[in-house]
Image 1 (cartoon, rainbow, N blue to C red):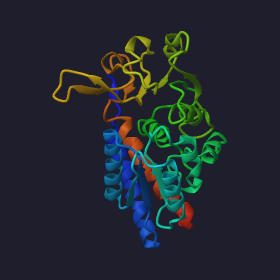
Image 2 (image 1 turned 45 degrees about the vertical axis):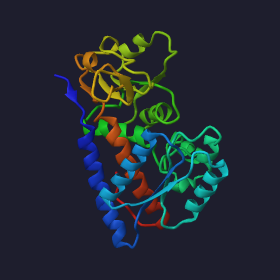
Image 3 (image 1 turned 30 degrees about the vertical axis):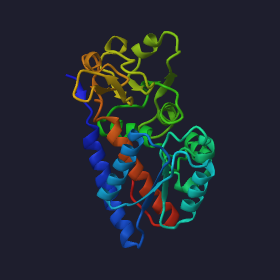
Image 4 (image 1 turned 90 degrees about the vertical axis):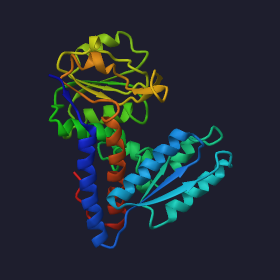
Length: 297
């Protein structure tokens, strides 16, 4: 029988660990702070930021939120980041993406102090990740690692296929899986929507991480029997529901669950882990900046 990988449960365990370390920091006179910056009128982005602020409150992290008009000059966002970089009570900075077209995303990522870059996307942090000396692991790939570890999925020597090559998930995920480390040492192939004969690559995969951003792109006929399937995708598709849509992953759950040994649902799989690992990185950042030891595995 296929095992459902419960991201909500594992994320709850991570939040509990984070809350314990927030208390340790508090005893040392440090209150971790996460600043979220929103420069968008997109309802989904507003919802994501609101959820992150609620997560902070739950574990005792101080949430600081800044909203900037979507039509404001790009320099207003850059100056806001500079101000947050200089604040001692802000240990992590997250600029909610996407930003408006007139704002240069690369400039935004480079403007954040690398020690406050809790998303892990500053070039310095990307370089450290690739070199095997990560300061912060990007939240979604790190969350996937936590799920694999929690469910005792053997990665060492396993054939892993990452479907998707984004800077946010695909590339860092592949880097983490190939590294000589716990929940690593896999033989990893990166595929994408233009990979020829994707089915042949997936047919030999012990672990599949689907992060292509294409609804139900991977189905059960492509999978090796007993494979572990991690579905990173979350896509809104039209449906005959009260809302007029439903959320589906990059994997066709119905067919894949008949073949896979273990699989994440959508929602309730990777999503909760991404949010939990943001809290994890914020506490780690607070420890780095203040010199207070925190016990995060």
